[in-house]
Amino acid sequence: MSDLINSILKWLESVLQWFFDLVVDVLDAIWLMLQDLFSWASEEILDLIFELIDQLDFSDLEKYSSAWGDLPSEMLNVLGLLGIGDACVVIIAAIGIRLILQLIPFVRLGS
Image 1 (cartoon, helix red, strand yellow):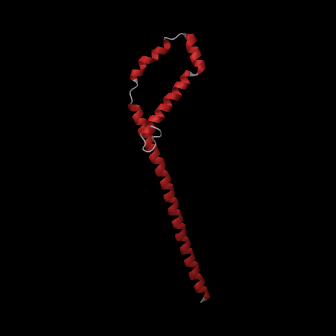
Image 2 (cartoon, helix red, strand yellow):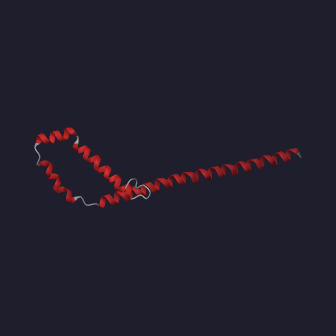
Image 3 (cartoon, one colour):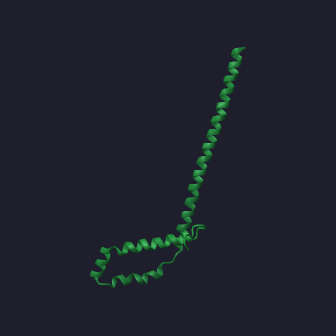
């Protein structure tokens, strides 16, 4: 009689362990799905931003590109040594980031 009870208890323990492992695997799968959902949403937002940037028309800026060529070579050399080109890129990027942040609610700090 004792062997029968022990075998039933072992079977019950194995069934409960199987259900516990199943619950752990399901929760793990749900966690991975949530991580993938966040990654997918981030990728879609970035794709949308890239599409919007591709739609911008920068053809009017071509007329200003010849203005650098009209400067004397000594002045262009000094401007290059001072890093004016890199500074302009940083300033334009900062302005662009600020404009993008203005589109997000509750991030309009100081403006």
